[in-house]
Length: 56
Image (tube, rainbow, N blue to C red; front, top):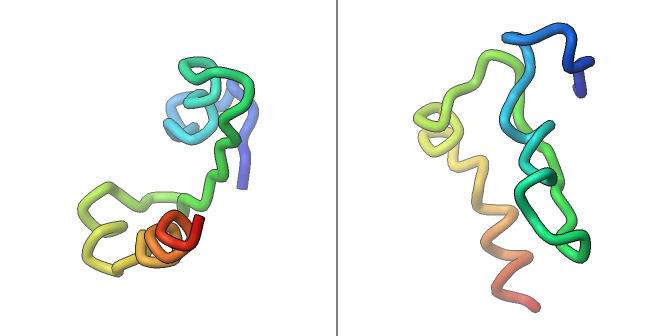
């Protein structure tokens, strides 16, 4: 879910990451509310991205 910037601090880095990248880079925000980088890694939620990246 994408939240309005005015809802901070209940916004995540995925909502602002595109401000720091060049326009040709697409940001896909697949974060879950309340998840941390630790739980993201523990749940192996990044494996889908690694498969996609390696297939390119």
